Length: 412
Image 1 (cartoon, one colour):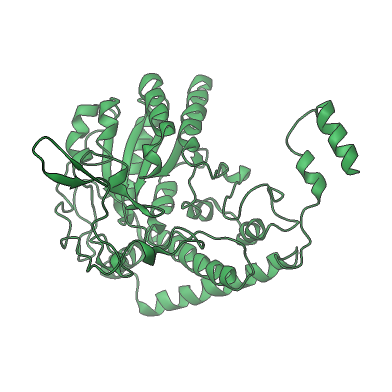
Image 2 (tube, helix red, strand yellow):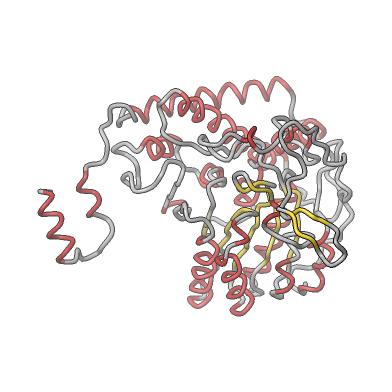
């Protein structure tokens, strides 16, 4: 779509930088390097103190796998290896589930390919009592909280052990024990919900921080602005992440904002805002830890732009070759989040190819074992599935008369 402005210069609104057939080139390495930005005191920091952080890009890992600068969280080897294992688990789990979808064993699936560090690093930086309000590319948070893969697969299949009894689409997980709130297909609602629960926690005096994620495209919706307005006014303990992965299904991020960065939007709401490299595990962990410290101290929200790239398709129903070059993700300056953390561990002298291979094999075996176990409770082809009567259960504490009449008509 083209318009003509006063100078008669044509410009294209929301144009993607590259289309199928183009040779993608993001310009090489990021301009901002690890160590470029100072780390303000989270307990005294004002919104104006974060202007450079919102316009720049907080990074910790350099291209050589070294951790540099004030934002380095100085994590121990055990924590870093655990983070790598969670990311590898998510990637291998996703790959297996996609293969099962392609062979008719699952109806629908969405991968987190290229974005594995986001939910995993950020959830690891939180406390167990904190609430997670995810979008559909944060299933890795469940691994951090200890959810069993069998339970996750049962939900994807929709069998009798699906913990939401078939009420949600596959990969629209919810898990009360892990404080992982239900994913919703009408995206964006989770931001307002997170702010509301954070306000309730503050009123009760509980040390509970809420975190939520939505995509660059979703940030163009009203829910995003409603949440920021309430967060600015009531100062609840909440962390609001815009995951700028460049694509909202088939529309480019440039269609969602006319500004320089998504992070800078938060400044107008008087919310401290930071832009962080979403493929840098250490930077994500550090920025989230910083935001949680502010929230826990009663200082209100932090607004974060997670700058990353969606390496895979939007979902199993999407063909990205229709709107972008097939190899575009290989040119992304942020690289591969899993490889970057692995390289850092190698640089520290605590990881090698043999350990990596052994861990891959171990996780793949665990995923296949979990899938076989899940199928014992029913599979997509033959069931058994949750009975029809479950549409009347687990909704009302006291069943209304008209719902009870419907249930009786069903004969259940």
